[in-house]
Image (cartoon, rainbow, N blue to C red; front, top):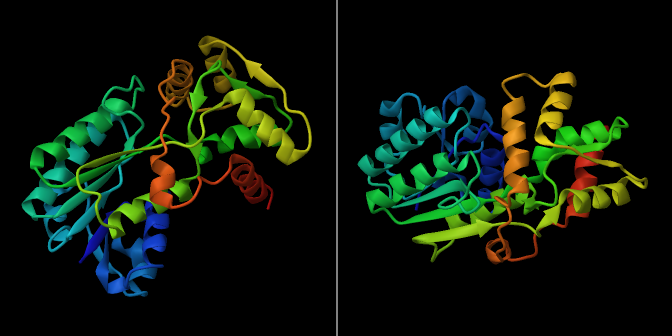
Length: 288
């Protein structure tokens, strides 16, 4: 059986590969990368490094050839570009007769109001339409997405949010990667949808846990979206990024990430990494 992972020079894909190498021989693992030179460290370990560029669909036919199980890690960029890239990758997988496709989606993708959801709905539909067995890994929200807020707190700022009492199923990127590896290397995951969500937590609850890690109180500044945008702009956040951050806060406030499920624990074979432990590790990495 040959497994291929895309996006391995990104943070999630890199951890998926490292996790797979703990349990499967390197010769059973392939990776598809835009710039193969960036994956030379994997080639040196016996991994089959292939050139595959989502913006050059013709390269994906060769990249996916002979692959039994494929993980498509969702790309970055604007929604229109991502929808096109994912559709091209799925079409290439079908042409290559790939036997199984796992895809990193987002929580409750089929119904979510999150502005990112249309990208993932389109990808899920494209995969379903191929008739290839699939598994949708609906990742809720990476705790690492909050690193800039944690850095601000470490610098003495309050925790700024316009998300109100909205809850998020935060989990570490590593846990999401380990779950993906379990699906790729395991059996019985055909035509499944996994809602991968940590314990639902509000901004105040997350900050309380962070405060315990730091051993001091952290004020929470709850504002409206306009105020949030203004503060982000004045803090030097690039103007094109500010509306994206506001949309995320608004979606959380509206409950878009409030997805309850025990699917995560099933795939991990253990509880999700506790937020206190994960936050402590993030703080240590920032301060090191």
